[in-house]
Length: 342
Image 1 (cartoon, rainbow, N blue to C red):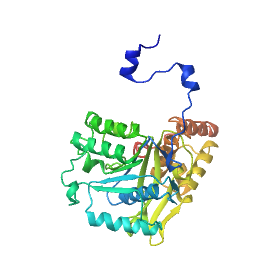
Image 2: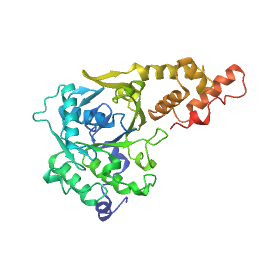
Image 3: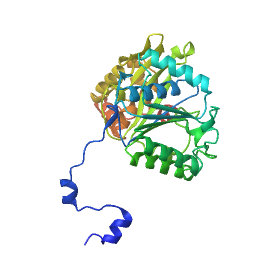
Image 4: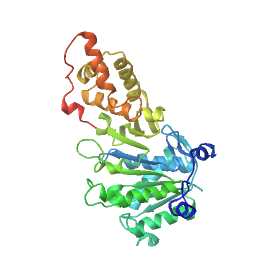
């Protein structure tokens, strides 16, 4: 006997292996197709001013309107966007710019904005933050009662207000809250800041429950336009391979989002193919051959690993094989600085 009835009631539903294999379980609904589905958690992280909120607002409007943009197709579902940083006027202005650039008619759009930190709307004046049980309970209840299918939390630092971001225990309540939303068949996208090393700030506990993690990295054009960056997928639990997860560059112009997939994924694919032909013995050599920096090569490697195209040891194995083919004893051209980007 696997469990008693009482035990099953206490811990949930149990199955034998045969019952599990025979059970008709539908595929999760795509919320942001093809890379984020109902019940899945994602995160965007970047330095301040790169464009995290612009991307998050764009994806929220895509999800609510059912439109296609940013290499993504929205499902046309009710969306809750919780902002904890911008003024109401700034949020309004950005929402207008993005809606117009996407040619979305806002009438009847199922998108709700809860401007927590700075919006002086009467019904939100006493809205507690997400580090408080009342705040988390309010969101869960609102999602359940209004059939919300996509939640954006912008951002973790302002809304979760964790004292020590490097403490895994500090995120326990927040991660449990995200799991509650996922259990309601809701997709969730959190927004977070980078640390000084170019990765997300804080504990790996933030990364653990995620299906996908996106890193926005400013391009040279961002000096003139803050909304110009590369989008790199640094975690891809489901191994989804598409233009979005393979990496691309994006810039918000007066015509809308200008997307260039070749800027990242084309060179990265060239890097992968040449590496798998054992043409490189270290990152420096690959960088010179492709006209990139060693840091960029390291990011390509990290993206290929996160996308499960390569595993953690693939690059080392390929360069070692390349070295043997040349009859050389040492491939130590990858400096610690280059290797420790992620």
